[in-house]
Image (cartoon, rainbow, N blue to C red; front, side):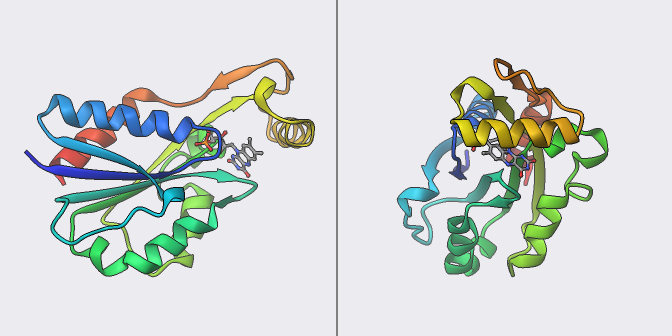
Length: 175
Ligand SMILES: Cc1cc2nc3c(=O)[nH]c(=O)nc-3n(C[C@H](O)[C@H](O)[C@H](O)COP(=O)(O)O)c2cc1C
C-alpha cells in the first residue's frame, strides 16, 4: 500500500472532481490517498508520502500563480518521490490538443518551471455557463465561438474523458 498525496488548484471545482476519481481508482487498488488544496498552502514533510501528484486548471491561459510558486518551493521534495502533474483545460477537448505533448498550456507551463514531472496528464474540463458571472460568461462564449465550441449561455458541458482519468490513476498506482 502506498501513501499518495494529490494536491490541486481549482477555481470552480472541476479539478477536485478529477482528483476524486483518481483517488477512487487508487483506493480501489489498496492505496491510501489524501487530497490537499494548494490554496491552503499545505506543508510537505519529508517521509509523509510515497508519491505526489499535482493537478491544476487553466483560466485565461494560465494555471494559478500559486501552482508554480508551490512547485518552486518544494521542488527537491517533489523530485525525491515518484511524481506526476496534470492540467485541466477546455482546449484539451480537441483531439489534436489532448496529450501532454500537444497541449499548448501544459507545454508552456513546463518551459516556465524547473521541475520536470516524471509523469504528465491533460484532461478536458467543464464549461458551466449558468454558474459564470456576466464578464466570464461573455468571454468564454466568445472564445468558444472562435474555437467552434458550445455558446448556449444555458449550457453545462463536461468534456472530461473519465476513462482517461482512471487510466491516469492506474498509472499513478504503477509509478
Ligand atoms: C473564466 C474562465 C476562463 C477560462 N480560460 C480558459 C482558457 O484560457 N483556456 C482553456 O483551455 N480553458 C479555459 N477555461 C476552462 C477551464 O479550464 C475549465 O472550465 C476547467 O474545467 C476549470 O477547472 P476548475 O473548475 O477546476 O477551475 C476557462 C474557464 C473559465 C470559467
